[in-house]
Image (cartoon, rainbow, N blue to C red; front, side, top):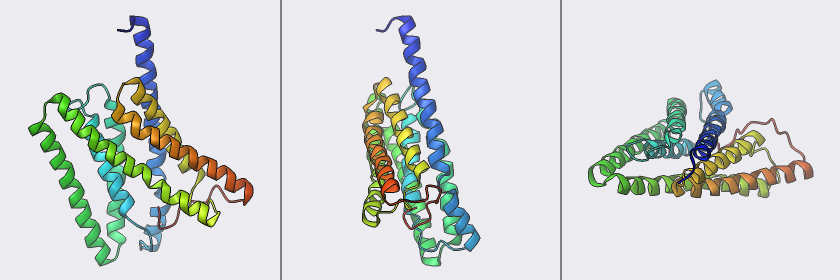
Length: 235
């Protein structure tokens, strides 16, 4: 049991880490805007993939549920950031479906329905069959899996950067936001004694650091324009 004064400082630090994570996550949520401006302008999804946004929506919904007081008390900042993220991803997916070819439109619509079906099923099963502690473990494991899957996607970008020796496909501010957000929620998870937060975000922190190191190496060695937006099929 921490002394009252130390407990207050501890609480302030954990809240500060959570708020910082929310702010840095917002940077990630708005990063695809240049891509969708291009889609709207050209009225075509071209060769862009909509799957990352589907995965991101599922991750946000699962983590939103994990952060709710019914599942995990005292980590409401996890719920707040993922509620905002879910809205952004839903908007991106809606725009993608609007301008996609018919076959892709049907596929994306089916995946969107599947995402909400998985989310509703997760909520129902966790509330119906688990008590409070078991519920947190069940949803926590699911959220860890979805977070690790989301953080694994930068591996494709890292591979592409090494292969092409170009930082065109890895904007600096996107990599920086990924690193800072992951680091903030890693600290938040540690301060909240929540392994379901600090384990996946620890992995995200390492991947973000690798991206920044690669960016520094290839921009100094081969040059590149750090302002160039991420306008490629991996967006």
